[in-house]
Length: 363
Picture: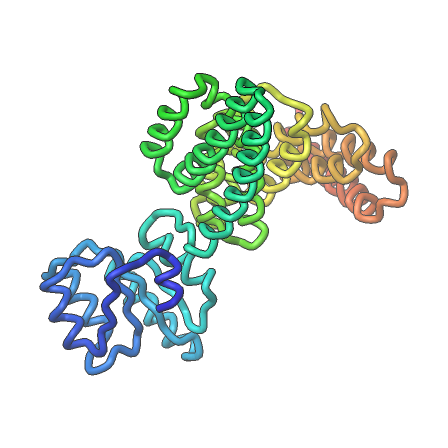
């Protein structure tokens, strides 16, 4: 209950059993329904079916929870049955606050900024604003009104930019545009200044990726791409987020988009990462192109050429693979994995060549 309050839920109804649940869902519309597998005086699956069949909540997102200590076969059957009832998210117990947050965000398809996070952000923003206002007051008292005005405006813009950042990360683009439009009446360059915050979205997105909060990361990278549609690290992060959400096709589209942009040396590590991920996905054409761009900027990374050789092997391009593995070994003669790979490439190339010779018809 405390977690839901922190997620800004109000007017929360706690239902004691299945009878009360099936009664109240016919009378009241909810924004989200949480149902546990062990529902008192009722079968939870039957209760969900009843809600979906005829009530005020036929389309209300439902989050289903269950104890993870049941045997695997029972768990498999339960998940199969519950998915057929079109629940929005399934959460096994015990779960953490972050687990619940991710499930709620998935159910509602929206980003949640908790009350505690809001308080923390506000405190930081307020401290910076108070410092700026104190400085502006001091300058004003000295008679430098023009300089004082500039500092007051910058403090006000900082607050509104922070609000716009929250709206954009939360997917509320209309609210974001409204805030920026209002700021624009004070500073015509407000939007251009706000675009400098693109890096903030990318950094927060990567922080979420590091702890596998893929849905939160996706929101941050979407915001970064909204501000800069050719931001390569943002597209890479978006691709990784989508893979974490099992949206492979959409992830691949973002990787492809990166390869259509003008190559930039600042993103050389991003190209290498796209090449590595695409290789694991068996998207070899994307991988080859990403590694080609990366190697045009990075000439001293033996691992890069080693990985490039593996892609060529997967495509049966043994001559290109051998050239790459030789570059890796020239850069790092003690590279054991590359030595082993070279021996295998030579053996595969020889076997492939012999097979081709045998297939040539006699004349």
